[in-house]
Image (cartoon, rainbow, N blue to C red):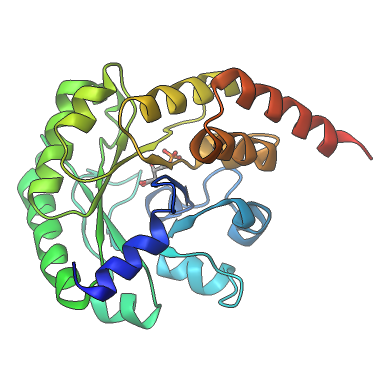
Amino acid sequence: MEWGMANRMAKLIQSDGHVLFLPVDHGYFQGPTRKLEEPRKTIEPLLPYADALFITRGVLRSSVDPDKAKPIILRVSGGTSVIGKDLANEGITTSMEEAIRLNVSAVGISIFVGSEYEKESLLNLSKLVDEGEKYGIPVMAVTAVGKELEKRDARYLGLACRIAAELGARVVKTYWCENFDRVSRGCPVPVVMAGGPQVDTELEIFEFVYDGMQKGAIGVNLGRNVWQNDFPVAMIKALRAIIHQGANPKEAQDLFSSEKEVKKKP
Ligand code: 5RP
């Protein structure tokens, strides 16, 4: 691997081989998402516990101080919105020159396998990989499902992840699902898990993250279930314990509860 590419990958993937990416890119199609209305306020307290931020150039420039930043994965696909016709109809929104100017560690793009825009999104990924490889910038492919959350099973996600890897993604972001080992086994590059919409209990998150890690994921790219939680710092610390310290779901839950109590104290 070329030095620049290897150096960027090493900034993202920590020495234990694991990652905790914090995505705050949701506004690129959802607008002011709940609890991300003022990105700086959401990001600042969580930044010390994240290995990297997944973010658009607009929020990066406006809401993250360059002297305090963590490695950046720049969201470079978009062009659609939740109120538009089809979320899958994305294009590349940001040039590689801009990514270099922003000194990012990777760029991220969604693919929409099985959608009407499957081909366009896969060709966008391929084009981005060609550009990224030229400059030593890894591409993270996001296996997006748009509003069709029910698509998240091992057969579909395994297919989408494998295609992303075949087209040259250096990392693939997907969802956790039952039999996650089928997804990770079939994907020859590292796989990270997103969280999806906020769920009812923290334990559900700890359980799926733990399960996915046992079954081949290298970590998470998990947003709403961190920063939409009433205790986001306690949440990210508990996730760090699973990802980087080998904690099990119960230990993560205990840590979350004790951190929550600390936060509650006047
Ligand atoms: C949004 C994304 C997010 O980065 C991804 O979905 C992870 O965030 P969450 O855990 O909130 O699902 O790609 O377009």
